[in-house]
Length: 242
Image 1 (cartoon, rainbow, N blue to C red):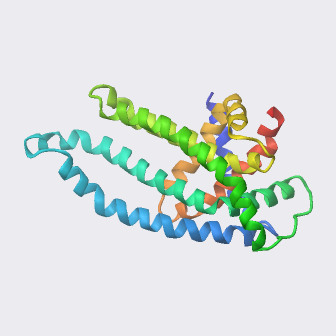
Image 2: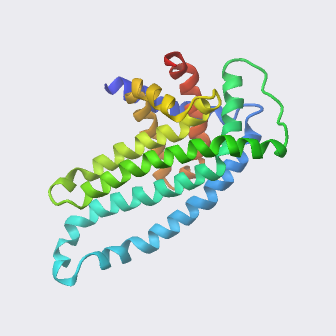
Image 3: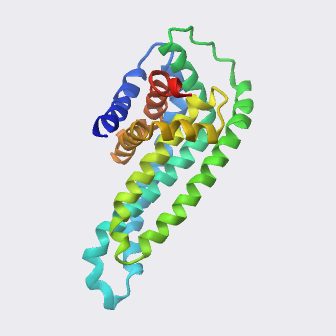
């Protein structure tokens, strides 16, 4: 179990090393800029809102509970906000991430990196990725609602921080591994079957990207690293279970 989780984690580092590869660097510019803008907004939002929300959450006569609830609330709030911004960033950057994944896979397989066909190809990629993004959002919403219910139920909500971390790691793995799998015309249900067969490796990878996403400055690189690492994981491991 631990070995599989750590194996998945190593693909975060592999993704980072791939970013400097020849022929790859131009394709990380747009995802990087999108990430910088959206995560800068997320950091500003969290820093200004978390204390205000906490104050309004509890009535004055329950203020003594703040020291108990604050760590749980802070973790959940932080994770929700950052993951929400991550989803938005990935939806906006999806066509560019698909291009990046395609080129990284060709490089890993020793194939020529195809020439960029120009921005006229972007509308086709948008249409191709929209259905997949919509399916992922519906899947996420189902589990998101369940976890919110767990979070607000007394006694049970003690497990909510761990549950959110596992949930977020799994969704991040789905988000990034969708790019290489989508490039091979796999549908969301087919992708889930492959990921469930490799659940621990996927969770380890998603957990690593989640950590990267939560670290200031490094979170700006989380998207291109996630796409690169997910593509390497697909080539090395997951494609064999297809």
